[in-house]
Image 1: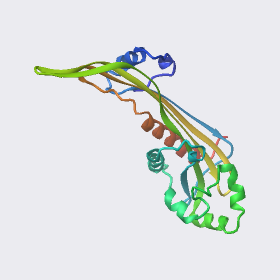
Image 2: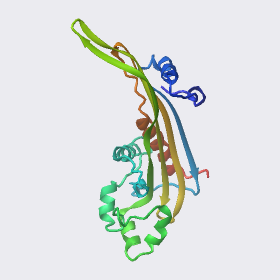
Image 3: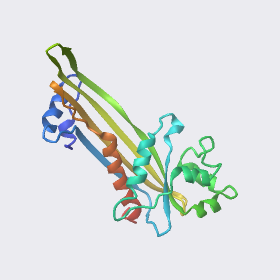
Image 4: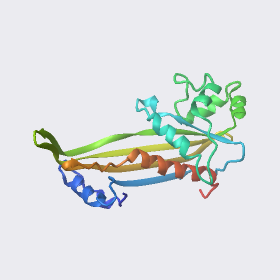
Length: 234
């Protein structure tokens, strides 16, 4: 269930966010989430038949490794729909471009690509790959706060769980799009999802989980696909 930013803006380390989410999510059996997707476009885009995109995890350079499952999720999601993109699997791309995209030799970011493409043989191999756009993906999902309490007990006559526990996760991801043909950055797409998960229990726990990473993948992939396919406006 998604609500506006203002409705979920009050946060703290007591049970109030959990109770608020419980009231809002009771009908949907899901946690509460707010999603924000933005784009910043620097140049016209577009993609022709036979051209592909490759999505590369870039954030390990600063020690904040993007989850492998999220990279896979984005790669699969952008291929779906009427304007689905042709995706070059990242591992195959790295092998095809050996040794320039290995972890130890990979460019530190899209701003390093022009220098890389000037090296002998790199531009030729890039053209052979059919890759038009390199998407540099970074970000992560973190638990920002939690509260409440939940206890379970077993007795001879039965048992159960009582209480309420809640936690908040923040999923924030950015995708920088590099146009290989024009050798410049086309812009950036970002998705931020904040979600509150709640487990209320009166004998039987009822988890209401906010799947923020999945929501961020869906929103970012949809916007990224439109960003690349649609040539404008800037």
